[in-house]
Length: 191
Image (cartoon, rainbow, N blue to C red; front, side, top):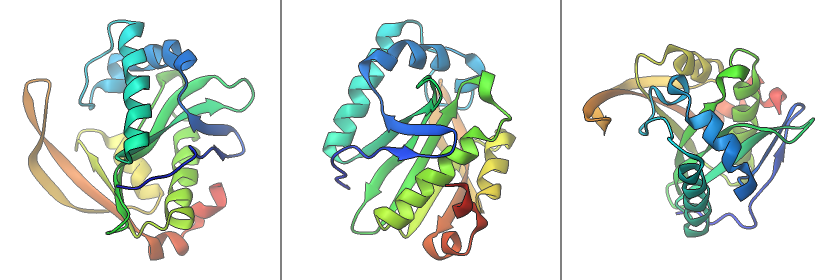
């Protein structure tokens, strides 16, 4: 567990990574109700805004418990939430965490998730002192895999039928990035 209080805000040239607020629930619903967004996710498309409100509550509770931290990704120009990213199971003793992220389909292909993740990775390595950051990706999610590679992640292997959601087992490709690799990376310039 890793306690990070108060909730940290992160700025990039185009984005603001901030705590998810209850008034963000309609935007969360818009994003997470898109089948393309949750196709490789462990949840189905949201059916209503109340499910999005429950996600906001869980994110707050997980942050307070030190088991997760999830930033809302908002456009700086108008504070519109277009996705989220964060750390799952951050561990201060082993100095490692896993990442997760999603983005509204209207903003795919514009480099926004790379910008958000580069800032989040910088925060993880440079501010909270992580040594290793992992990502687990469904092999069919080629866009996500390409994104991780551009950020310096290396694929370590395939975890056969490691995930179970939507009534099926799923293989997960394991990617990792170490602090020394980040220190040598040009991705720090994205922040």
